[in-house]
Length: 224
Length: 219
Image 1 (cartoon, rainbow over the protein chains, first blue to last red):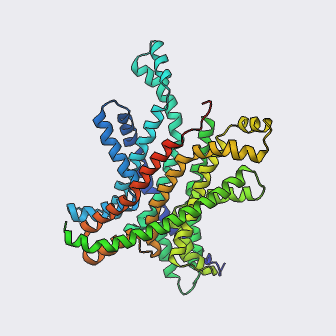
Image 2 (cartoon, rainbow over the protein chains, first blue to last red; image 1 turned 90 degrees about the horizontal axis):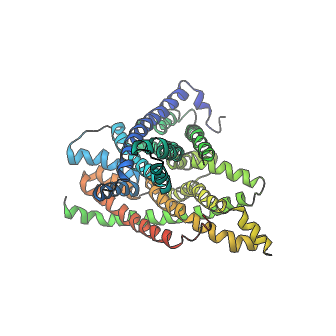
Image 3 (spheres, chains in turn blue, red; image 1 turned 135 degrees about the horizontal axis):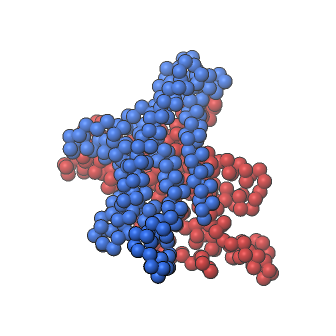
């Protein structure tokens, strides 16, 4: 225990503090995921419209969000808006903005993919059976699209959780930062704390993401 | 925006971009090696190794690169494994990328229906010939889109290298903002340089994807 620096974990409130740090990261991902999913569904539906201008604008937005590393986006919002617009955003708000913008783009593409993956004959058959447009979407298209969509959006949640580790770099006190503080505070008593603490953080992220991944995979298999 | 400032900064960013590219490409190449190994082990169902590959893939895919890097860079020296920042960056990227590549290759291999191998064998091919001439060509073409996505993903992930004090693009930008407060110029160059790295890869990827789309017989 001493050699691996794991004893620090059980000293005082260290474990609770670490979990609190993880809580901050999870809170940011949860808020961003909720915003991303609702806006993403909206934009995804818009992307399947025939209007070329709407499609072009959304496509450009999607490509920009996809190609820029999330770290760069975080810097742009956190440092850039302060200088350019005079906003004084704190780290948490900036990260929610960035992750929502990015998540919305990813989600909209998933929605678009799920809708266009429904073969044309499904629409035609529905029409041939005399269903109205809203009936067609409600009974035929959406149930199938949603089945394809749910596993993919659950995957987006794990990606979001993993990405929130980046907020450390713009000064949000989350789980890695708390680990750093604990390591610093116990530098003398437990010189090996860095090993135990970072291992714990690693495992905490794994425990947060693994069940969600398993769920996504299970649903995907079942609904194939 | 001040053109003189941008001119001053350019050489710094060029250095940083080269570092990003060098470490990124090395990490991606090693990821491909690790990924091929893991996919092969799983496809050929080699006992023990198959299980280890599975555990590795789950650990790597469900944790962020930043945390992996911190563990390698600050954690491992405590049990006697010391690495310099560049090695650590490449090791971290390989640890992350290996599993993503493995999944891309594995899904390619698995997408080829059993009947293909059986038909090949019934035509008198050995198992190796069947894999070489029938399964792999199709599997590769199925894997390409995921492979390209992974390359771009891994290049983007290099942006966390600054956390282990590698002087990459993020590090340079943050450093310059802290030193001179020319935020607009520093961020502008940051975006431009990432675009210079990522756009060609993305465009090339789309072209390659279109060129090799020849699998999917009978679907």
